[in-house]
Length: 463
Image 1 (cartoon, rainbow, N blue to C red):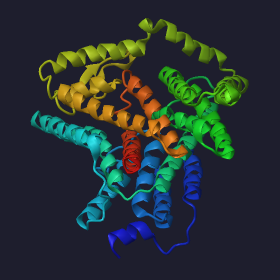
Image 2 (cartoon, helix red, strand yellow):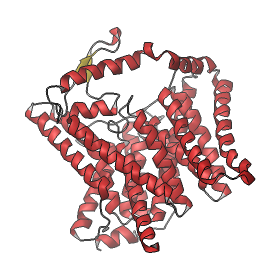
Image 3 (spheres, rainbow, N blue to C red):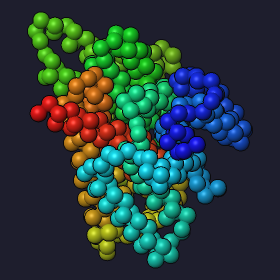
Image 4 (spheres, rainbow, N blue to C red):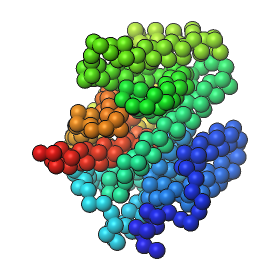
């Protein structure tokens, strides 16, 4: 059986919709997270993933969906006891399939675009930074760990060069939504366990930066009312989860993305004869926000906790976490002066003390995307990164402006405006470089480029 047949025809197993299997994964993961038996969890997730791979009609797409799903649902990054982390297994499998397909001439003939060229240049600089780390005799495991975090963006090339259709793009988006739903349920459950006495957050909270704008775009542009209603219902638990994190950046930037989406929507379609229809999405989101606060107060009585966190936004100059970020950035700038162009290399660290009771410990990653890039890859790496992000946003805007169907409107609106917010969020966290979500962001980048190239062809044919 050729690779193309293997990838596109699937296996002689009874077909079951992939959504059922993703829901099954959500349910089992939710149950098993309560169990201390980590080995049992790993085996179960592995078996479910294997069944999903056998059932899903396209092997390459199944691997891509699982890569994104695992990256989202893992509460925290796993260790390197077996060299590769759990979240890296499926992406590496995707690389292997891609190499086989490439050798047999079965990959897509899509060009990698300007995004791809600038991203490739950035990844080369990361390689150079890794070599600098080796030359300076730093911990090789840490060098590999940091390099893999950056190279996660390389999933862009795998997805772009796969023979992915519009239906398969929908499957990826649905997988992200279902994964986010699981995360929101998990957050609410954990918050219930601690009875609302403190905040609850994991790395997973960052997915809401994209999923809530995606669902809001469905409310704005999807033609089917049942899908709009489903989007409203899904936003409710995700909004409550955002409250639960007590993360001020999420509180500010998710609403910012929604506001920008809505302003563009009103500018694009405003009509006095149907003004109520256009105001309805704003009313829905406002009601969801109010409902979320009322539910939290009714269930846990956490109005004091929320108001205290909101109040801290007015006194940022005394906020310990922001002051620590600023101080660390100052130390990084001093370090980079010795190697401004390519940075000091991977696996460099700072000795820092956040609180007197915690003592001093090594800091490898900053809560600032851009300072992290300057520190490890220098001004050259940072500039290359910013250029490929710029072209990514430019392509997302192109898809939004020239969309021929609701799917492109939804993709363009959610990705463009959520990544504007994510770029701002990068000033106070490593959201675009320091997390396994780079697999997700790379997937969305590939989706945008695929749709942009299709739109390019359509516009050219019309002319």
